[in-house]
Image 1 (cartoon, one colour):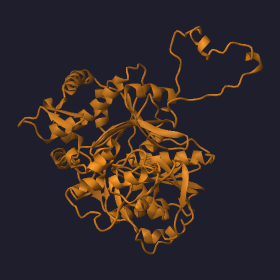
Image 2: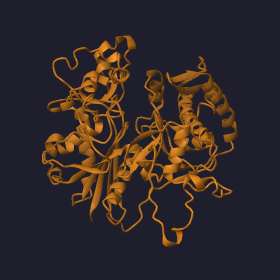
Image 3: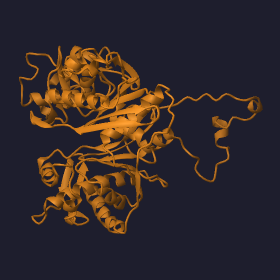
Image 4: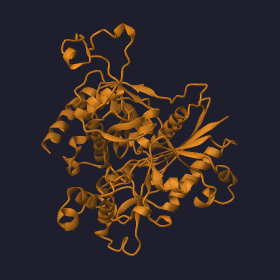
Length: 512
């Protein structure tokens, strides 16, 4: 039976899915093996290749037929890989070094705000503060994680999502500014990855796939040669697509980060939209209610009319500055909000101390040693990053870690309340490590509303969504309706107590 395969890359790991025409699917996921290099969290290219090879082997395990196509979804503005003439020449960086002081920006760039910002945000320029030899003798380009994997698969460096620390117009700068921007960032344009449209066919699997992945005695890898690869944009969008999310019911992933997204039309936030409405013979002589002369005289309904996903997205953007990224289909884009992860060892070390090495998650019994409200601890995020309020010598690891989870969910509730809209639907919650599934009840209590909990890894969910989106884009008829198991979680009586802690949290956030 024909299948669509997908690889989903996230900031936490890799997921793979093989989706059949009868909606049957096989999935595989694993976490990245992070190391510290140059003072940053990163994944070595050798480990990245091994992870991709294991994912492809898992999809081959129960199949004898090559897929019809392969979908690739990747992180947006979260990863950076330096590259030379031969391709990727550094680990994959998952966070950025310390920022560059304004006084250290060369005058050639500092006099132009856009160039100065590009200089300060460049991962290479930031690293050169501490490692001046980087790129000194060998010019370096910039890739994203998705572009690095695409090169391994096809031999072409391309991605719909942009690398970490580059301007949003990368690489489509105007002819007048292209050279200046690349020079400001320190990257060689010829060694940098290309950017493609989401949902488009990028290239085909190279016959050298096994060699690129450093695997031997793998005839199944050679059978993939010539299979087309489609880039489906941001993995957050693929996760949202699989969750059947929309502007009223967000797809929320809670891990060491909090990410809330949905999908809508590519032009939902366009400055204007032109719509052509053909008139029927019966309405040729009727007054046009959409003209300025007749707009004020039109009868107003007693209740607000039902809005489309694009209209809701446009409305929400007035209250919240939404992030926009490509995918997961040609006509769709990803919208939402996110907060960066807990990068400080002060927070990560207690999380690791409580994490069960076998499951990769904290045992709920251990986390429950801290009371509701975490003993007065509050973790808040503002322009300066994450801040911890209320820490005393009596607090233990469980208090700090529970405060992290509560702080993440407080942020989601605050976003939704800032919309000032009634009738919002339940969020679709995915809990990533280190949080156990029992934390879904805490989330419902904090949100004071029912939620839909999807007990699946975010990587698998994104891989499933990417495969489904590509299958529909290619107009392949499915004989059954695909689905992902989920459960509804209602708030408990403890929700009233969380209301008091949330009010304190909001007061602290307003004062920072």
